[in-house]
Image (cartoon, rainbow, N blue to C red; front, side):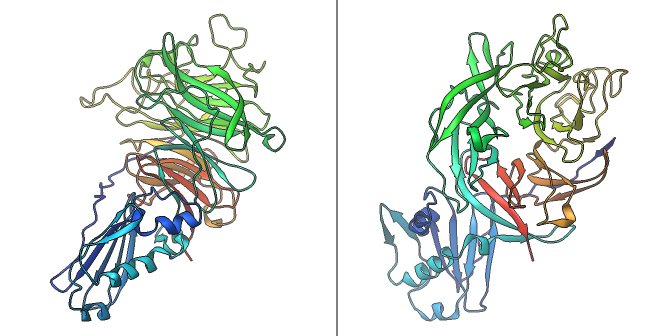
Length: 475
């Protein structure tokens, strides 16, 4: 077991505009500048990006910095300053044409358009990491609180949006309209449409699995449904699992979906903000469940046949699990879960094990900082492999096994919502021997982390204007 303390500083998202008495500044919304260019490759033109083009008579340079919703491009050109009326100009898109506030600003417009048509992969920022530079390539923008990601056999991606939409994203970044045929979804607080996974036999059966929050007579709870993907729709959608009892409030729904090599499905849940529920075996809340691909109970689940216990429960005592991945060598399920104020945990999930929440935890009560439960250890309750104080607010998780980044092979990657970074863990068996924090405040709140079939790492950011990003070698 190990723990980590983080003293990372918070960075401002705002970007300072550099200008002086000799500068010419152009600003335009990316919907205006590159909308038509993106439409030619199927990219939604609703993606907001601000382009700033600055000309100065003292030097010639270009720089770009990617942030969650802003790209700054400063192009400095001596020739532009030879134009008397090129002082300060702004161009705004109105319907399908530009409105110019100053004559002669076509020079600025031309510079902006030239910048806009640079391929996105070439415009991606290169960021330093301990084991070499990585390029952050924005695949798609304009996703509303994207939550889960999976890869179709043809290279396209399915992406969930928490408000209740499922979309297909092409490799070129174009985003489909919302797919039809989804179950009834309740977007409340942390709940909504959550994870997505493909059946192991997807090529033959086309089945897509979703986890989401749904309302019933007694409240709201996590459910799992599946449907067959046909075009831009799920057909034959049916609910396979409902966490019971349902509850009030909008907290701690989990939820990740991971298929085991034997074909069974793990579903991670949260305690719904009601701590004692995580210790009850007659309650799905605060557990990891295991069902078969049709929603039935595998006969070797640990509590099958036990009076008063939910047969789907595989482990319990879990607070709110929002990251899960199958270990590529052992075939065991690894998860992380949110602690309260401190005490986020990394665990290996084993049949019938009690992971302690809320009896033991390395976290404390919010604001007041008082102890929760009985301390950090208790007989019969598992210790985490690794924990974080203060909390990093983990979400999404992936083991890296590909060849694009050979130096990362065998490492575990976890998104951090709180510190807006990507966490890399080096492992020796079940021991964390090193931790790196990277991409701090480069993309924003990282909600999901996946290894793609192309060997790159893919990230989703949790924002009104969320992005799907790809990490590529920087050299």
